[in-house]
Length: 152
Image (cartoon, rainbow, N blue to C red; front, side, top):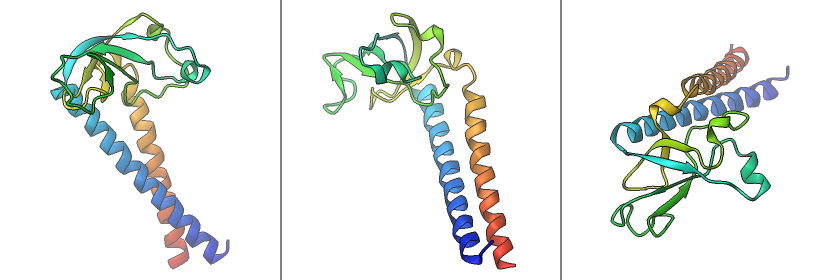
């Protein structure tokens, strides 16, 4: 492999792996904080008319918040918030998220549109986080390996 190609490839892989690891850590920390300090409520899964929304694995959720929550910038209609939960990335939407189904969630009182599934609703969320982290570590290691091979 050409030295320039290996160097650029190593830098790209290392940069991608590092950014992916930072993103994973930030997401996991945010979701953990919202579950721990957020407000627990029961949301309802909304039916979606557009094709793109139906293909999204994260369900569109609706729940009510008190008028004083979230300040002026909250995305809601009256006291109703419509949003999708963070950290939900299966390939297909599970059947338990059918339209009209109740789902336990936690939301950030400062930003009601920041929603995570409650601990009992997660399913295999921890495994998905580990897979994304493993991908980041693998890319970082491959990039570092290429850079070491070129430099040594």
